[in-house]
Length: 359
Ligand code: PMP
Image (cartoon, rainbow, N blue to C red; front, side, top):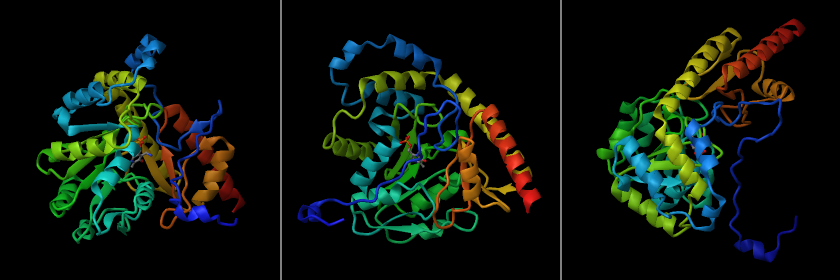
């Protein structure tokens, strides 16, 4: 296509590609790490109590009810909490706010594929650090001059969790820049770096309601860090869009947070299903790095991942596959209900056996 003159001034960006969101009554959706269970029962009650006339007014720009609720829940000051429209919004704001140096920011080569998109969008120089052959972070790679560090723990799409000692080693080596730990999947077994925010004022811990709190459709993410970091984040946010959190989000988010027993019950259920499915996938000839998340990043010993991906898709079982270096032979399979996983496993069992007969 011919380029018009005005296009010279356009900010051009290759966007992030989210997982597909099909909507079919018979599908089994294991492609974007959503929770298979509904949000806490109080959320439904709060939806019923909602009045459309309340929408006439702007929401609280400080999102106080949710900020205070999170501060109480996690035992930090409300000045140490920032909320946004999903952790994507929080992370994007953090890139904009904290990564303004001339030196490259650092993140793993295999990681959340939004990081390089934000870096490109905001023109932040970046370098990736290769994970080792077991998809583990090599802390020594992060001990060189840089403009900031970000990594998910557990990592995505690998599912690999790094112990807190490694996280702290990286923070200690990077006291002159902001270090962001993206903990989207921390509630499924890992230990959060949250206590370290009291020790390191340059550490930002980011979490989400999308996975463990079953609220992906609501879009709530949050960050916790020193008061200084949070003030800088708020200054950027209020220079961008004051009303990021709408009224229904605030009302429903706080309800989800109130029900700790329900949260513990569903996360424990997902962990139990995950552990069972790990054993069954192994028996079918899959290998995977051990996962402490709500997904398993699996590769089959004989059948290419893309082939399995297509076969599953035809059966309306959606998983995620990336045609990217190092990971093109892996499928990221979200942990669904026991029933959903049984359907997946029996399909795979039959598919693999059929493949063996024709070989
Ligand atoms: N970080 C990681 C590592 C993720 O996998 C995701 C989910 N796509 C997110 C952040 C963003 O999640 P959300 O915006 O739904 O909070």
